[in-house]
Image (cartoon, rainbow, N blue to C red; front, side, top):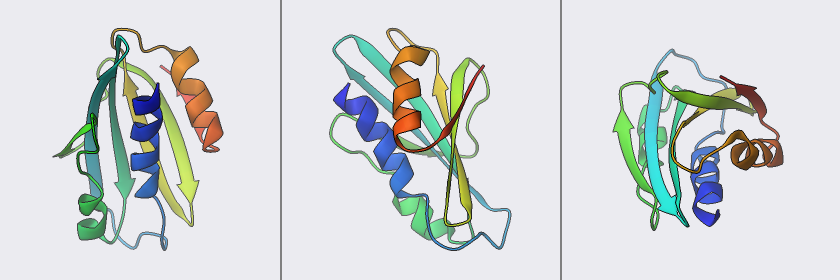
Length: 118
């Protein structure tokens, strides 16, 4: 469960600043496993500061991060949309062993996100 929260917080840390002036999208894919739960997620944020956002996509303990062109929309459990300081970020959570909406929904709500089940 700790890693699930870390994944959410690592992604959220990159969401902030001024409203984007371009359509550049930074996408970061995260993978972690703990206590029989595999967490696969990906965050996309439109930004005018690509370098800064890309620098936020990095490994953190058991959480492995990788820059990708765009987040996949296949096999999505649901999404959590966060809006801060005029920027919007979509977190995609993917179906995987042990990961359910009951696990992810409270995390999304805790950060004032808007959850949509797929």
